[in-house]
Length: 172
Image (tube, rainbow, N blue to C red; front, side, top):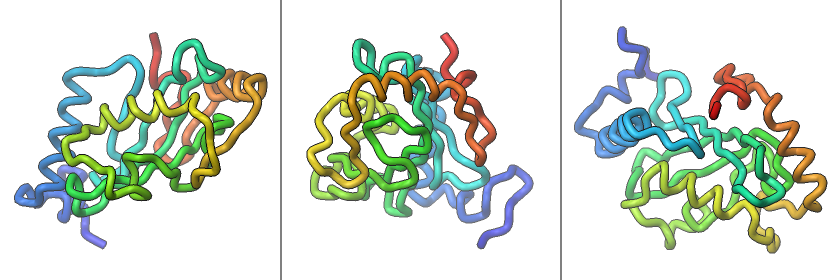
């Protein structure tokens, strides 16, 4: 494990010649300078390779009003290889604490496009929520009334790792 530097990042993250680090720092700057009201994403702790995200449920669906928190695991070869996504907040669509199968995730490297940004990936995830599970890894098919209950309950979620509350992350 690398030692932390005075700036709070691990020494391995400080190698600005590493294309993954350069790209992830650019992604972070973009999200900070041009915030999207539908989502937030940020590195967890002192590594750029594990991020947390929160997304709003898609409007006009059983997920509407919910805020869903999760993790993104970026491989050292990012952006040439896709990240993995794990939900931490129950939604009735994706299992919690399981890498989920998406066309822009590590389950489908053949579909991955290095030009996809963190924001693009998360917007795709929002759009993907109301689709049918169809047996995909980490996919759930709950009835809409249960999903609406989970959407309401999601606002009370506080992440044990980053300490952030869903209710505060995406305020109007």
